[in-house]
Amino acid sequence: MHRLLQLTLDFFDSAPAAPPQEPAARKRRAPDTTARPPAISQPTELLDQVLIPAAFRHPRANREVVLGDSVVAFEFRRGKRRNIGFMVGPEGLTVSAPKWVPLYEIDAAVKSKEPWILKKLGDSHERQRRVESARIEWRDGATFPFLGEQVILVLDPRHAFDEVGAVLNTDGEALPGMPRHTLHVGLPNTADAAQIRDSVQAWLMRQAKRLFTERLDHFAPQLGVQWRKLVLSNAGTRWGTAHSDGLIRLNWRLIHFGLPVIDYVVAHELSHLRVMDHSPRFWDTVRTVVPDYAQLRGQLKEQALPPW
Image (cartoon, rainbow, N blue to C red; front, side, top):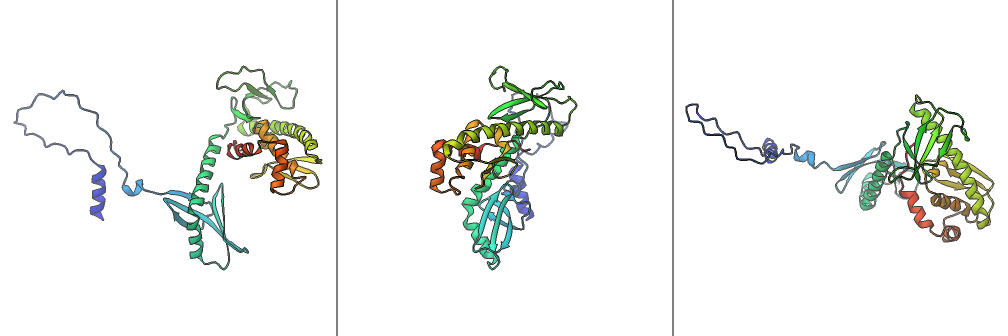
C-alpha cells in the first residue's frame, strides 16, 4: 500500500530533482541567460480524490446505491402498495415499496431504473442550480421578473402613489440589456431585505389578482363555462387547480411569466370545468383557445423563478 501511494505521488509530482552543489573550488560558469519557459504547476490531488463519484443525497436518505459513476442516497419508505414506486423531486430520489418486498429486490429495482433515475436527478439538480442563480438580493436597485420582463426596484420614501405602497414606472428608455421598467416602493433607504421583499410581494399579488380575473373573464365565455371564485395560492408544485363548483386557485407567482404562459394556465384550469381529467378530450378543449399550449407548457416547466 505504501508502495502504491508512493507511485501515485511520483506520478503527479514531476518536478525535477535539484542538481547537486558544485564544489566551492570549481570555477563558476557564466550565468545562462537563455530564456526558459515558465514552470507549470502540477496537480497535487491523489487519484482517489480525483475519481470521487458524483453524489445525489436526499436529506432523509436511509439507503444508498451506486448508479453508473454516481452515488445515490435515497429515501426508502414502506407502505400499503402493490409495487415499487420511484419519485424524483427537488430533494432527491424517494423509493416506496410494499412491506413484503426484500431489500435486495429494492436495490435491484433501483439499478434497473438507472438511466431514468440519473436523468431525472441531473435535470432536478440543474433546475435547482438555475433557481439559486435567480435568487434576488432584496435591496435598492435589485431586479425581478414581472410579466416576462425584468423590473428594477427603486426605494422611494415618497407616498404620493396611485397604488398602495408602490407604483410601476413604464416610461424608461429601452436600452440594450437593461430593464425599461422601474417599481418605486414607498420604503426608506434604511428598510431591511424582509421589508422590501414583503412590499414587492404584496404589490405582485395585487397585480396577479387583477390580471388573473381579467383573463378568467376573457376565456370563460369562449369555453362555455362559468367560474365562481378566484383564490391566490402559494403552492410549491402546483400552478393552479379547478373545482367542479367553479372555484379556481392560481399561484400568484405566475405573474413572473409572460402573458401567453399565464393565459395557458388560466385556460387549462377553466377547461377542467368541462373535462375533469387530462384525457385527449381535455387537451382538445385547451387547444380551442390556446393552440400553442404544448410550447407554453414547456416554458412553464423550464423557466426558473426566483425563490421567495
